[in-house]
Length: 368
Image (tube, rainbow, N blue to C red):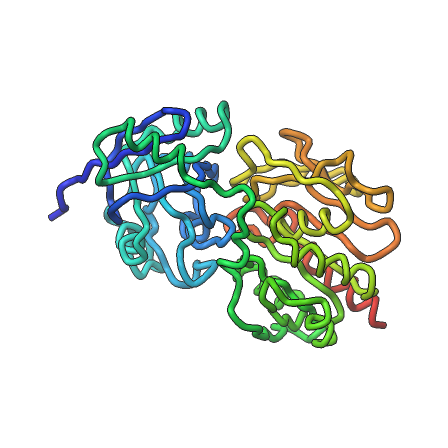
């Protein structure tokens, strides 16, 4: 027998309020309200460390129908502060499932809300931008919750990478004949990225976000990888300085994804700006200039590299076709490149999957 529905309020800092009911968790949480356009992959989204500090609303109306399974986790726990749905499936059906989404959210203390018009909420965020928000199962006065959402400190200027990085260095061996050894900085790295590097023939030494250049080079890598991660890249002074030092002193191939792309841009002196509502979903169209192909990609970021601020030694390799955002750049003379999208695409299309093999090839050629 299903438990009675509990009322829940979703309040945005601009005064907009949505009423729904809680299917998991309890209490009151604050975060940045964003939306994701993926039709599947809710478990990967929940456990992606890049969502630390955020509340996610799913545009697809029916969520949870295939349950959850440990193999799909991108980290050890969910990082989303609240999960907003039109309708949550209470009876999932999937031979891989080990449990249901509601039970999973309950287990990890994540507030799950359904009964919200998520398309209306998404259109509002698209129009007004990602903003501070509060979700509560205990507050019944909308005005009071709006005021608390407005007074929340927000995510700008906050270092979230240190909250989600690994505690200690660890090594993942290559799944094929080893082609190269890469040191991967974990700023909130998804497990599927490590798996893709391993599948491409890389022995991966994963190091915490605050690892110094000297400590990284002591592992004698063939290349450096800068991972995805949450939030504003500008407060990560230690990572930016380490990347600068690696560029200046280590003649090694380097590859950055998402937050790593932004850190690499900052290390080269480029400027970063906050996107109005970000790119989050599995259907972002980008143009790859070298091939003239249009690729459909998976993305999750709220910040971008300002194109006109890139120094002359860097050339833009990809642009987002929706808003022109820089989706990738490379050094004109050295094997250093980055992309804003997620080539591991969990969830999402595999149009950019080849970049892991390309990175392994760069390192292999560099050591030959």
